[in-house]
Each structure stands twice: as structure tokens, then as C-alpha cells.
Image (cartoon, rainbow, N blue to C red):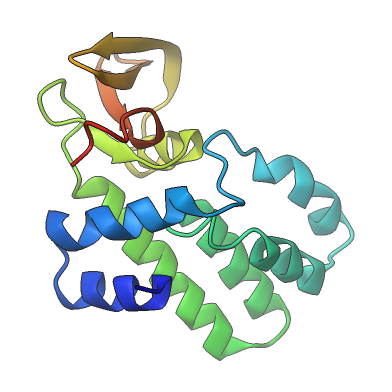
Length: 170
């Protein structure tokens, strides 16, 4: 099944049974990198106001960056700057879907961690929660790996690292 078909199934019926194959397809992409630091590659393009360059760079990284709220927000902004309202709206919707996917995947507790495709997703969730991380630790238990971020108010926010848990993530 194609990524587009998996996305259509998920949009029509957004639950674990349709999300898991979509996430798996993203992780199976040849250009998927859960540790990607896309901002470092985008900063020179932003500084040069090269909005088409931003779009081109991010599209070359698809589907590996698919379902990243930040990436879709960058794409929306670049399309907006180029006067492409249709593209900007499409990417705004993709960013909202990606964020809703993250937020609805858990509640950040040990029992119901947020399920993330990449480290940057953890920081997207913290931004959404209006929280700031002061420390991070990795926890390996029951054949699953988690990042646990402690926020400025002492709250622990748990994230399940799907790329480390492929056998246990179902």
C-alpha cells in the first residue's frame, strides 16, 4: 500500500489500527532519520529568504520527514511566502494532523507515553504543552525504549521511541 493510501485510511479512521502502518511506512523510508536536525540545513535558506529552496529541500526528505509538525509548518510558511495559499493551507492541515497524531497518542505518563517517530517530535509536543525541558534520560524496559524529559516545573514527560521499538510497537 502506498503512503498516500495509508494516509487516506488514517484520515478517514484515525486510530491505532490505521496509524501504525502509516508510521511504519515512514520509518521504512530510505531517507528516514529519527535523529534528523533539519533546522541546521534550513537556517541558511531562511537567512537567504530562499523559500523555494526550503520547499525543495524538505520535499527531497519525504517521506522520511512525513508526520513532523515542524516540517509541515516550515513548508506552510514557505508556500505562504511564495504566494501559494493552496500549498500553505495543505501544509497547515498536515502540520495540524501531525500534531494531533502526537498529542492523541498518549498523555506523557509512564503508562501512556507519547509515541514519536523522531526526537524533534518530542520538542514539538513540549512546545504544544508550553513546557521546557531541563533534562533528558533514556529508559529501556520491557523491550521498549523511552525518552523521559523533565520540565522546568519538575514534570516528567514520557515518549516512546518507535524506531527503537519496532518489534514491540504494535
